[in-house]
Length: 203
Image (cartoon, rainbow, N blue to C red; front, side, top):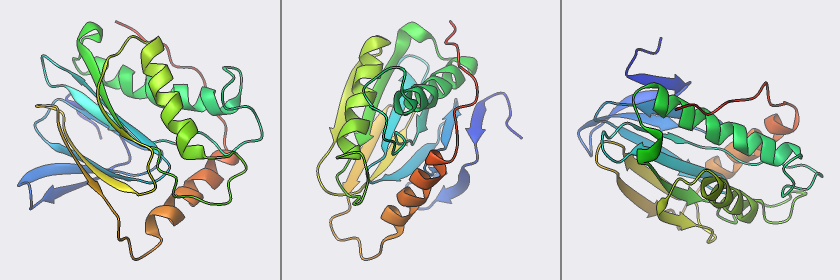
């Protein structure tokens, strides 16, 4: 059960021996927000992750999402893809504000959107994911202070909300299909689901 210093959607919590820190592993469709001094980790292919934090308090969080593979136009605000992406972003923003972040202090670092998946009906889903997250943050007037988007490689992202530090490792020699298979499964689930309700930004 989440306590008042964190909000969570099904992450895996573990102790990262390399960084000697409590860590949360964020899988596709998940997010994590915390006021604690800890590490948030995810591995991205075509998906994108937004790392959002209050630059003064260090309260922050990370999401991991993909626009649904749909025949609808991903660039229209009325289509399922952007509605889903907006929902994923607003949930994270709401959660960091709920646990103490101030809207005017928010900043973002964004990652992912690699061209690593094949067989999607939307051409270059990674590009659309990357374009969406940049456009969303611009509309919400949340400054992007760092980004590592597109390319052809998956990437592993380590985010320390308290300091804003991010480490990105390009996975240029992945010897199994775990990342691709995980995202294909996630995409399949998105096609069969719908966005439940709307999220209002407050603060």
